[in-house]
Length: 278
Image (tube, rainbow, N blue to C red; front, top):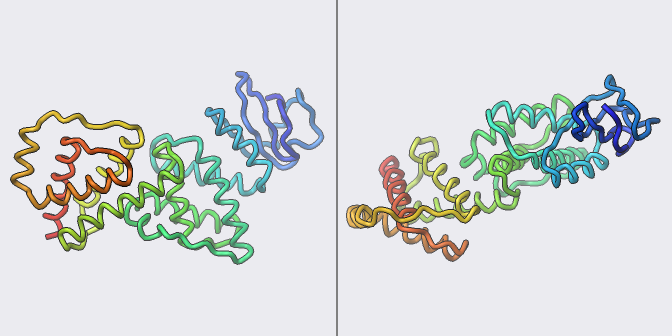
């Protein structure tokens, strides 16, 4: 591999044998070298090949601003997350999670603890990602001796969810608030307490997450079966009334008019949810 650009004493941009650009990191890797030199491969600790150009530009800037140890640690966590999820995630996680993790470690060193107002919701709505966040805290402790608080596991979980959905962190927070608001509408409409370990509850959460993904992409279900919609409306009037409240909330908050098909799916999920909690 050849050096294409020197970022600092520890990071260089290089070209692999196929002419593809990557960011190589290692102690002293960029010291005393020039553009066009061959990279000393024995010094490479991490090599990042990020396809998305915008993300790569952000990552280049980031690696010059934070310690190499934090970059390597974040990469280990991201590799573990990818393996655990068993699917690809957005390259943006290399920027968002690495930046957050480094900042969290530096804050904790100074005794500045940042509480997460979405800790409870994250544990409920994204339990698998939250557990990965807790494992990440163990990895941080093992590498640095710093024990980050549980709030950070929830922050990490939201970054993972964001990478899964391919959106922004703010969008993930927005979706989390929406899920909580919709659940509250159902909770107070029927005066029930949810079994958050139940299958129907988790099915409903999945339905809401997919609904929000379609909302973000401006996709809707077209109404195909008005007759069945009318049957559901008459057979489950209370569930339908609750769905209408949610429909109004979605319209007022997100300027999206739910179709009959979307409302129908919502009625069915609400019916299952309240049956399992009755």
